[in-house]
Amino acid sequence: VAYPDDLHFGDPPLARQLIDVYERTGCSVLATVHDPPDIDRYASLKLADDGFHVLDMIEKAPPGTEPSREASIGRFLYSEGFLDALAEGWERHDRREEYYHVYGLKKQMEMGKVVHCRFSGERLDTGAPEGYLRALIRYASTIPEYRDALRDELTRL
Image (cartoon, rainbow, N blue to C red):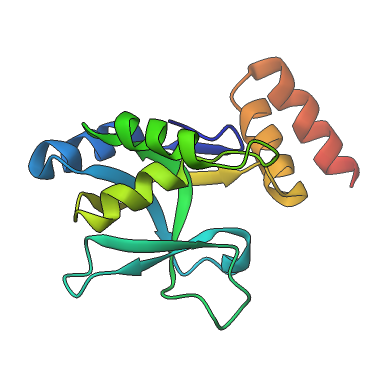
């Protein structure tokens, strides 16, 4: 599962990085970044003593209260059993509220079946104005006719 406001570029691609961790562990895998400057915009992870397994995730914890500086960045590879846990959560949730995948993840965390993968490569967060601008500039720079227009505009600034 990929949240649409994060773009990733790398070799290997982020999906391959998650698959590699899954193939070694058989666990669900969360893509993470370590110590982002605005961690209160993310879910921070409570990690097991091994620093690899995820025990809990706290969404948008106030600064200074996060359980670690490891933050989930919206890429998930779900392992076997996740959909069953998700269905169980659906049956239990209050239909007046939005339902999130976190119930299924937390059930797997209780069983020691969730790990994290600190991604490598470039990440553009289009959920913030600066990141959106960076993504547009990066994209424009890959297309020759846009690259020329971009260069002309930047020269004028």
